[in-house]
Amino acid sequence: MLTYAAESANPSYGHMIIRTKDISTIPALQEELEAFGREALPAGEFRTRRLVFGPGGGDPIEVRVSGPDPAVLREVGDEVIEVLRAASPDILDPRTDWREPELVLRPDYATDRAQSAGISRDDVANALRFATDGVSSGVYREGERLIPITVRLPRDATSDLRDQPVWSETGQHFLPIEQVIDGLGHEVQNTLVHRRDRVPTLTVGADIPPERTAAEVFTQVRAAVEAIEVPPGYALDWGGEFEASGDAQESLGKQLPLSLLVMVLISVLLFNAIKQPVIIWLLVPMSVNGVALGLLGTGLPFTFTALLGLLSLSGMLIKNGIVLVEEIDLVRAEGVELREAIVTACVSRLRPVVLAAATTILGMLPLLSDAFFVSMAVTIMGGLAFASVLTLIAAPVFYYVFFAGSERRAKAREAREAQAAPLPV
Image (cartoon, rainbow, N blue to C red; front, top):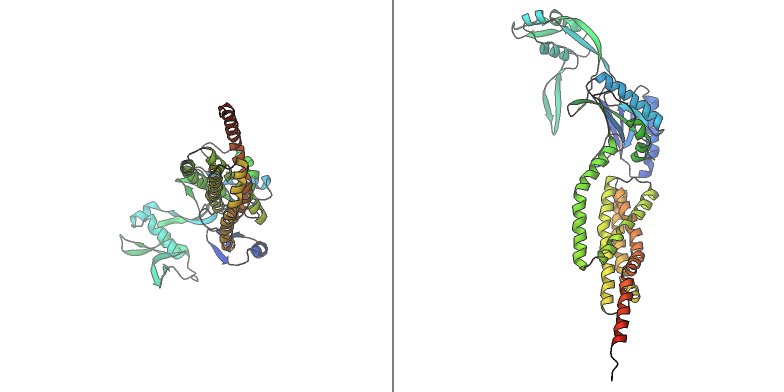
């Protein structure tokens, strides 16, 4: 899916979602839409992006500036935009979430006259809101839709704002708003202000080219942005995918050590030894090579779902390692020599290991067309295929390296015992 948003200076904007079954057509479609937007909307913002699935969202590159003074925040935000553009050519359409300041109409409330007439500031504000944007008076239900009802003056009304009536609760009559104000002034205001932890925060966001990842662009601009000196009382923080990935890794990091400890203990208790579990766990890092080849070959980023797929690979590889190492132990228990036992066990377990990997890889094929799970599917398929082949090669080598010394010592001990035994009479 592809979504594009056309944004103007005010916070309201429109979205359109375009669905396609052919993922390869999305880059060309994005380029065509962006060219159309720049030509048709020269005074606005027109951006396209792939629809985000799961947690996260927002812009891939985000810098947050927080502090008390909105004017200083805008100055630092403009400096951040200049630094981002100079630091990397892959920074596209940098912008702030406060949008542009707007010229607003501000009534000068006449305190003495208005209070004598029983009209408060809220009464004046409601009268002006009724004459401009309108006042919400209820909700109309149409099936499952709730449509707000707004009451306002007709759009073709030609009356002056200073002639608008305002209701006085004390006098129970209407007064022209001109009698309770000292005129209407104009001033530039921030009509859209965001706060984070109750502190005014301006966020600078930027897009990146489709062929680049957020991590690559972040590496290019990080040092330059962090070198910006902000005034005392102001802070500069990173957001976007850097923050989202950090939060996800922190959440996994809290649970991962306990999970790994339980898996290691189970493997040690299963063999009642140390060498066999060490051999099995040495096979797990080999899956990273297959994952890297799969993602580089398909051009997919290493997303959060890909991380989950990489973690799930450890269980699959441990299972294959247990099947192979246990068979070698069983053959050796029958009195077969170490080298011959390794060859015999690997030949007998070749079919189960290959078939188990093949069925898992084939089971991932339907997920290749799913935009959310495609990274996880490629991670599992590439990592499992590569690591399964290496398992059949590395596991026997590791087993021989770990047990060859004890095998030689056992043979030497048997030879000494045979020489020391008394000759039969």
